[in-house]
Length: 234
Image 1 (cartoon, helix red, strand yellow):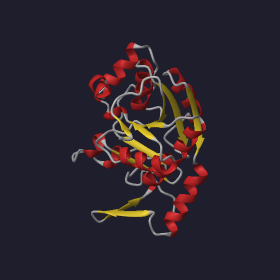
Image 2 (tube, rainbow, N blue to C red; image 1 turned 30 degrees about the vertical axis):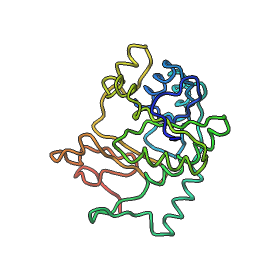
Image 3 (cartoon, rainbow, N blue to C red; image 1 turned 90 degrees about the horizontal axis):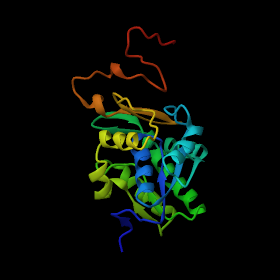
């Protein structure tokens, strides 16, 4: 029997990694409207791109979460980062370019600690807002199973009903607007960020276009050293 559910488990508790972004906000509201009981879990990773982390659970409840809470993952993330440094695995190279292994470390900690928290609430179905195009969908699935071998997985972006109704940012925004549900980031951002206590990445959207310079980035952990008007103290 497959552990991956392709349709919404109506009447059951579904845990979701809730960031407060458009994808997870729409997913929680949609699941509740269709008859599931969403439980929202937000990882505190020391992320600098979330200005109001304590307020995230309240937003999840506005969208229909049965329960919403923050899980402090900072100690475990620091530990995993130090281990990665000791093993020489903190700096990763792709195509000759080296970058910090911050996001994968954050995913490992998030995927294990959130599922552990779900077990405390008798939630055995796990979901998140990752799309079918990226590797996060595999990361969360496999890390979750390490903690709870009986875990079942429901990903909204693998559900044809969800994708057919809310298959893009415009559709998700309209879904929330029609139901008078608040969404703070109605304006499209030029790029995405992914941050935790170890660092931050800026990616996707306009940054993937060859004609776009990195000068559009406003660093959230560091300084824009590539700009002439920015002075970096020696």
